[in-house]
Length: 138
Image (tube, rainbow, N blue to C red; front, side, top):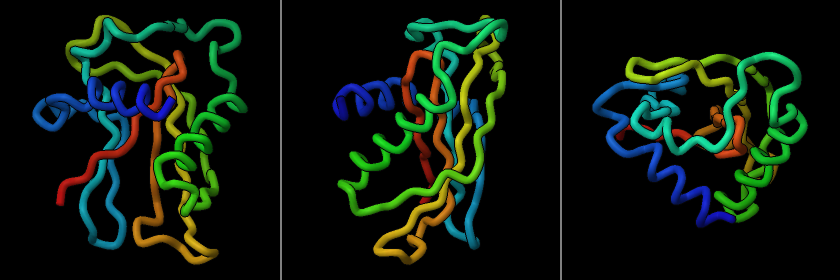
């Protein structure tokens, strides 16, 4: 499963820094600027589309489980995340054919009960369950 998400992230991450199609951008304590990118050229690879009517294909509780599992795998269980906000939003970047609904989820990270050095994080869950994680400039 981790290989799937890593591969998907690589697809979504390609050329994103050049086109600036980010869902969210942040900086913590004058550290590196980070963003979650959604590359419009990867739009055709999406397996699920939701028009905003009725129930979303991924419930908020399913998005939560996906994020917690992703964090556990990404940090080999060394990080304890605490989700602080969920934002179900419609996203449309220049070059996209349509709006895409997604969950933009903010969480904070703890290591052994102490805030981690990169404490504040965002992650995006697309309606097909794909995860988009941050990229930071160094």
